[in-house]
Length: 325
Image (cartoon, rainbow, N blue to C red):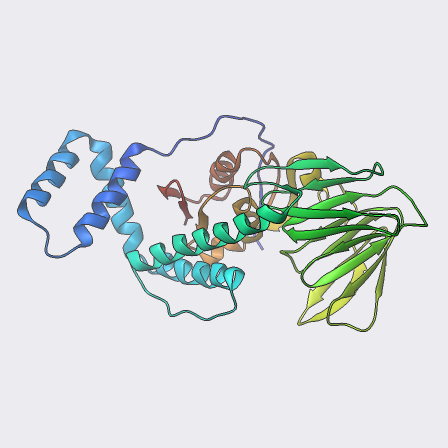
């Protein structure tokens, strides 16, 4: 795996998406319709002549749209989002229809999250992080696009992690165990610090203390201690040692630190912190190993820096669709 170093970047200035790119996408959509009226063609030629950037932006989108790697990337991305939204299989549709499908899928996920938020005691939107101090002094930090519901009584302390990822710092109380539940599992502790993730094959990472983990469809309970994490492979769980460096928990400090991580995995993580979709249109690019340290509040700047470090090109097709190739 090729290795690249990406320098630490704390610049808060967001690279802007040009209006030319936005307009070029609109023109591309209009010109895909058939037949195209002569008046529309003339209007398009006048738009191209207004500014050299207009013609350049259109040619870039047209070239990208026709490339095989872009179509393949869209297929992969549709499968990923469709799997996240539901288990149903959907037929692939090329061209503009696939982008519409992707954006509708994102909208469907957004609507589902809105329903969760109606019942949540605390939630975060995309790119947002929040911390809730509970009645017993314990704290829960929610990562981007996450939601929880809290239920405390004299017998126990219960939190439902409805979606996303959360870091728990629990105050000891042997008379009232602390239980975290998701759709697929439950975690039981007395006092400890740990991460629960509903969107990963690593549903549990323990920083301090001891955690009892049990999948909803399992008869046994796994004990996970500090310095360990739970990995899920083919519906089976395995306790392994975890990297206790700051990189594992860096998101709790509003940062994203990684060492020799494949670019594809980095982009998937960054994608969680910004609206829309980021697509890698090149498998070789996806396998490049990168090391970096960034602030999570500036996803677009991270993408620009990573592209520069790996020699990739970035095309902001719209505010909701970014392509690296």
